[in-house]
Length: 353
Ligand code: NAD
Image 1 (cartoon, rainbow, N blue to C red):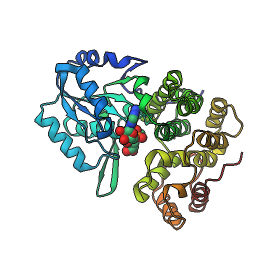
Image 2: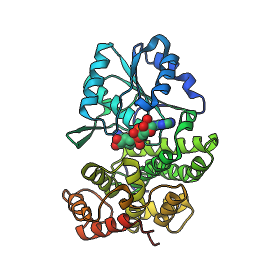
Image 3: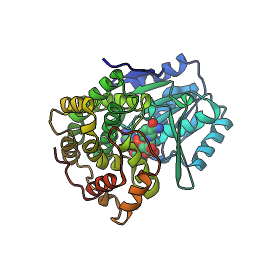
Image 4: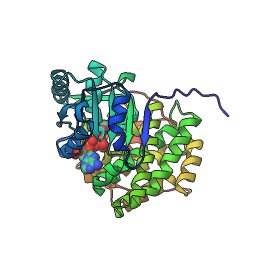
């Protein structure tokens, strides 16, 4: 056993089918009585259901959450929270809605009760993001970590396959990078391995049998482990590349993660023996990178950057940006090797063993 440092994050997690029934009690347990319910416009109906369940403890609904938390949306939501005298936020939705709750918490320190409905994992992390004039800034601050997370797989029943598939692959990517992070430790690696196993088993069923609540429960359990892994240890090449592609080329978040993770895994796995062993076990394969590509293909996800609207001419600039600032990665990062990785991802080639 190597030496390690593991700092657990203090969230309370309530998991299971029907756990939304417990939301009002969870809010009461924290002594909160004016919670602003947040959602996207598309999830207004779920937000109304949550507000109804909270009864007198609901201060109102703010339903304008948007991808990547534009500062204007964050500012408007903060003003609404102040106007209503909110003492908490209940964020019902995916990473965009929980991200909006974090933007409010960052300014006012309000507690967040998160009710996740995708597999993005933001609910388990102290990471915030805000986008101003097209540039996304991120940071870590413990005051944005949700106090309580209520995971009810029933809420993911409406998640269509084209969102569920890449969202699940995004969660797998969190697990994989956690295993070879600079701050990796055996506790988080154990959670990350179990996260990959649960998600890889569940996702094919989630997209093919939308009514299969057992598979939806497994996938959400995997997403919880993935979020907890992302929140506790640092990330590496894959997240750096996805941040570059999302930020500078405006590529969609979860689809980009889905396309890049087989290639980032192929790149790093030879330099990360513990991750290789864990991934081989979780995916029951001797070629984890190839198996991730096959999983993405099987669940109908996009496989090539060119399918997201990127052009071949962008690849040089993407490689330049990705190597601009040094960061930790188990295998050294060179411009030439990253350019080759991007070329493989652009064309959607299956990584060889
Ligand atoms: P999202 O929150 O933008 O949701 C995508 C769409 O799906 C939205 O229209 C949403 O309303 C809809 N949706 C969500 N759940 C649904 C459901 N159950 N049924 C029907 N529709 C549903 O997408 P996401 O992938 O969850 O989050 C992406 C954002 O989260 C990005 O901005 C990303 O950077 C951020 N993120 C942050 C962290 C973090 O730790 N801070 C972690 C992961 C992702």
